[in-house]
Image (cartoon, rainbow, N blue to C red; front, top):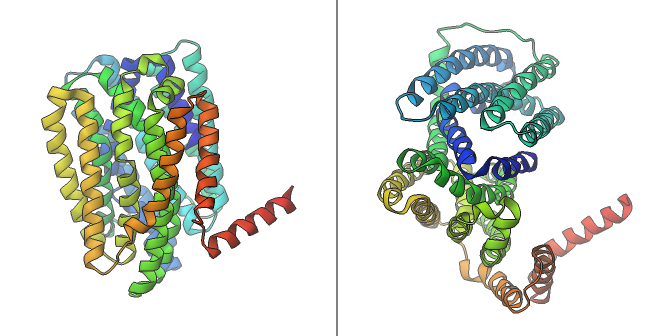
Length: 455
């Protein structure tokens, strides 16, 4: 994630706001349609094969064949649909290259799930890291040599083609590389994968529709301003992503045990608020120097978007956990219904706000949508008996954050120095406030002991 984020920063600084806007639009546009080439099949594979390993070959061969077929349909759909809009030839070319990269990425994602099912996690980590490193090196080199946005898009296609064939060699060590054409089985695969596909489609549209609508209603310069701030928020989302990936198996194993799940839900929210509250408030205070440092003075217009999105950061973190808990307790349908309702709200708000307020309107629409998401997930879980002591969990982080924020405003300093002492001061304050419980203190001691032995 860090390597890809670094490439986006380099692209934003070298390409400028308008060209970066073209790239961001194309990336968002193709990702929305990318679900066609997947149709939830990779999630279906890991679910079915985990239950019955004897199905591994049958599902692998037929899903691979079906995904190749669906990838061709996906590319054709993107090619035809983009020509219905009044976009420049350059923008269309970028879309074509990224469409090819997207369908290859979808196939690669399926192979990653094959690695996971076979518990070959190092192979997944290796192939993903090599791909991201190659994208960064090749992309940054071409940009620094003066090549533009089309070359950057072509880099994604070229690197992912090479990566695809390298990944095939690793897959070959696990399963024979054969295509299956059990056409009577394909409708079953599509039917079984549909719930996963629908959820993935709704979430993808929700994440990308604002970028597409800004481009179609306003212009690509505003897309560049909006996405510069949005990328920073996406980068911050690594923390809830790590947390929910570890949370889902634990909650699933406790299915039906409301008291135990409530305790786990409460602890997850404890860590979410521990990070989200200081991150959103302190970053809000430092928004302007952060944007200028990361993207350059050309993106000064991004500051207002970044501030608005930071207001919704805590909501974003919270609904990630809420969604995971719902899935873990077997409420996937309700999670999908809530996501659909919020998506409809988001589209309505974007359509109403973007024509007059542009990219700032899109940020407001995102903030409101995230709040409603959080409210609906939390409210439904509350109705099921999963309650959270919000005031108790948020009080000490708010006290510590307020203190550090006051000191930042009172003693302005270099951005790097400010961030360093803000982090140090925040966790120092939390220690003084006796925030850590016995389990966490024991964990910290174990980590410290392990580090001493390592070094």
